[in-house]
Image (cartoon, rainbow, N blue to C red; front, top):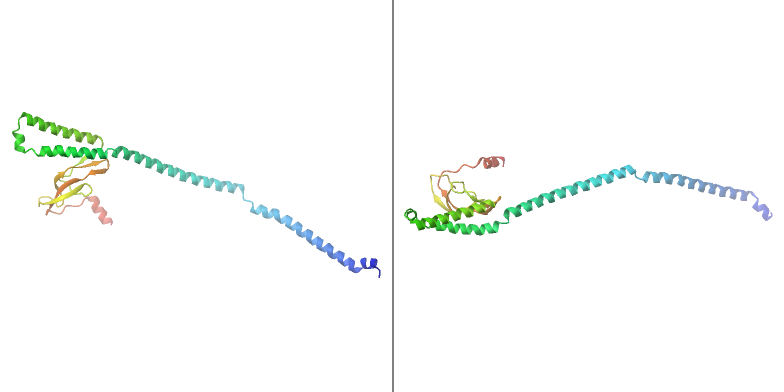
Length: 218
């Protein structure tokens, strides 16, 4: 058998058929892959409308957060400015109260009998001291400094400092019956608590309605 016969024989035909089958299969696979790739890419591609919605939601959330922060900053700034205006004179007012205390002590040091029989010079001097004290307290009040009216009030540790107790059954227990040194507030703060003497031994003082309601709720 010649070489040409071998090349053109059944084996050659079978080999050609096999090669054609393999090539055809490869072409079909490539075609399927080419067809599937756009479909897969189409599934993975996000919807532009959804993207815009998500971005809009994110921007809205950031805007609301920023607006809340700006509102808090505005309130904090307003509070700081208000406090600065209200309490900037606190140190000066405290020093002036010491002067007012000395004026009051000078007036209290003059006995009632001496006042009654005082000559014109002493009377004028005492009136001048009293006017100076009133003028000073009035000036402080214009700047938000107010005197704490303690005598006859129920003892309140937020505004009063108890110095001693006085046995007294005529008034409710823990009633302020004597003021040793006047107290003052500035704005909503206590500039100086009132130094007081409180009654002891009297009937129990009724609690305010607000405190009673709070105790019941507790």
